[in-house]
Length: 88
Image (cartoon, rainbow, N blue to C red; front, side):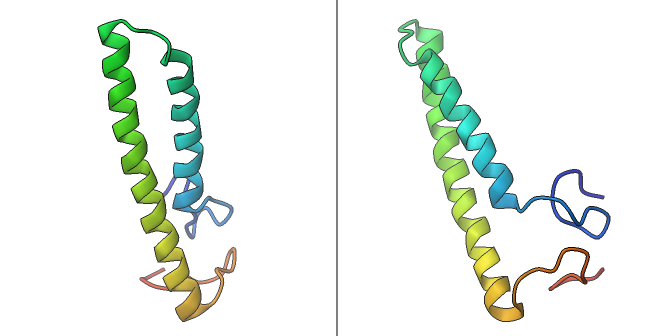
């Protein structure tokens, strides 16, 4: 059972890229709050967050690509309908 993503048990769930985009926006907000802090700890956290942002952005692109592949091959997803690939 998924907690956030679209599934048979959660037809009103979110696409992976939607969740990742919200997380990315939250991290950007946090980065803004610490960007002026020059302590070594803050700089390290900011550096780590920037690396995480790059990885999340890559993951969003991959998720969007998967959505495009599925929509091209099987049409748009139907909420509450059968899965386009895999087993129900």
